[in-house]
Amino acid sequence: MVKVLRTIRFDSSDEHVFAAPAGSDEIALSGAFAFAGISTEEIRGKTRQAFANGFLALPSLGRATFVSIGEASASEMSDAIETLAQLFVEDYQAPDMASARDAAREEIGFAQELAEGKPLNTLLTVHRTLTEEGAIHEEYREITPPGQEKPHTRIWDVADE
Image (cartoon, rainbow, N blue to C red; front, side):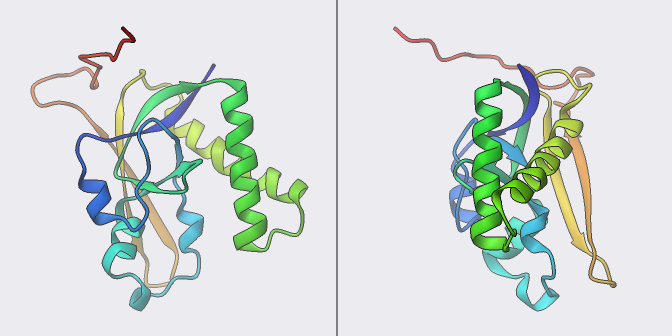
């Protein structure tokens, strides 16, 4: 198992703010590549919310406001790489699957770096802005419950009966 970012939903708000909301517990990554070359005129409505605060989830390709540090199996990682590589070929003109897989590994690797060294269940948010030069600037914030020094931990589990 490796540490990854996983989508988390506290309520249904993502369904209202994103054109395509992520499901719960999907592998997540920044997904800022989707906004490469975007102009300030294009950043409005649900696109604005996705740009400003949305993580990209795999396999749904939806967006989520919050992610938590979780784990993924080798099989899940392989599936995530294939899903992202296919997106790069179909929507971003990657020249071939081999190149697309390399780019997918790099994107997912960046998300793993964000998770590295943090305890499981730590919550993160992202805030993106577009600089005057047109570059995307990202800031990540760790969420700690008020009055606590330790990051958020699960207080319940769902068990099969």
